[in-house]
Image (cartoon, rainbow, N blue to C red; front, side, top):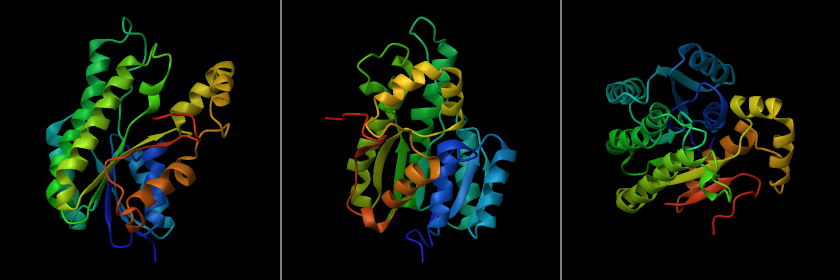
Length: 251
């Protein structure tokens, strides 16, 4: 019997990469998965894989930058599964580049898909999470880089998510809701593409990771997030946890 047996998890951006890895890991622990994202074909493929493995999953198309779409998402998940026990805010558009190079449109998209969507979904799911629910938000160690060049806008939206996470942990802990944030290094399609396009920079990047590799989406990132949402982590609340092979120093 899995550690998340009987739980329902809503995961945004779950059609590929880290979100998909978390979905696979949680399904393996018995959770029913609401697989959310923009591209229905990717969501359906993800669900088919989990169902083939013996899990339960349902795709839900959603644009996290749209408040009405988020409301429909939560209603659809509750109508289909009956409740929501776990919320994973993973979807994020990434505004990378120098301050003079990132457009306001890109920065706004990063804000709307990241902290604003996280804020909205946490509040929409709050009534269902009361009494034992868990929220995991995805942040980034970008704000901990000694050289913030080209990462300022991305770090800004991710740090806003960390602040919202800590506030929810402090305000909603009394309601039985645990809220934590993870900072993953994962072998997502975007990172694999970056490594292929920038082999020298990638080699330098790997040298800063004590374990000399990035994490696997399911085995390294997903399994840890699944454990974080289980009873094995019942007293963990309000924490920022780097899943990055030891690269970030959060002190």
